[in-house]
Length: 381
Image 1 (cartoon, rainbow, N blue to C red):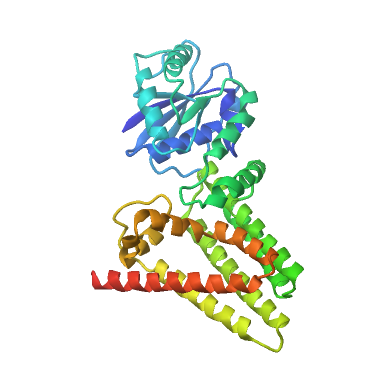
Image 2: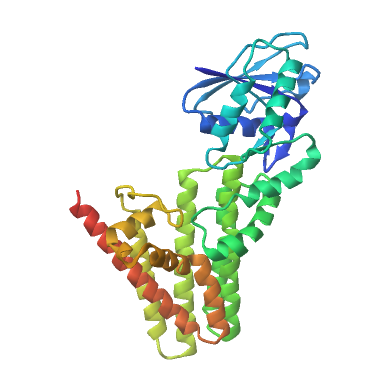
């Protein structure tokens, strides 16, 4: 079992991006260590006992966390890794592992709390240019640190509009939300009022109502990024949360399609053509989601622009024969964030029916690819 020392002072209580520093450090260790470890939290001897604590509400999978009460003269155990609560860790790939490798250099003979701090300062100065973490000397650095942290909270699967427009807005909102106890799932459910309101406007079918309705869906697309940003910042990602987000996104798409189809049919009364078209498109969307949700082998290679289930569909459907670059642009231009912004411009141009036709074309092609992928996966077994 590996042994780790965490030197904790008043900075352990600093709340950065929704988590107290000691809790964040322990979460990062629990996530990055590949074997069980015993973590000794050693409080600054000058800190009063009423300011010392452990995150009892966390259920760590790899860590056994204990407190070690010492005096200024006591020698601390010689361990493999020594950290301190002024280190803020970014959730970048390999950042925690890199930090552990760097801080393992602080291992030495038994030292006092002050001697360990001095050794860590030397180690930190030597690795100041290393990405993945930063050292907080003062609480005044927290706001800038939070901004930098959230700037890297996007996903590789983000579309072009999400990357350059939606994420910068959602990060501002997430930073405010991280100061509250709101959970990712609670946020996902609360903002679902936006597509409901958007669909209600779309059912009216007139020019202004369609634009207002699509603005509600655009706002939903922006704020939908906050739940993932909160989950990653607080180390509370969960399979259930991801499923809830997917279900709400799918239901939102269905509300947009059916609401728009119903509204267009009202404007062309007594014709029901657009409403029937919207029902067909909704069925295609549901079919596509069900096929993508079916268990299948992992994709042969990772593609940062696609979620694994979509990458698997692209591989098995044979779409790659068109060329990787073409497929990349096809994926980018059909992502929800790009589509919603395009729909706004189409509605502004007075052609809302085109939105329904485009959604139908994309849903039909996607369903065809999903069916092909599903059939090939069954034949390959």
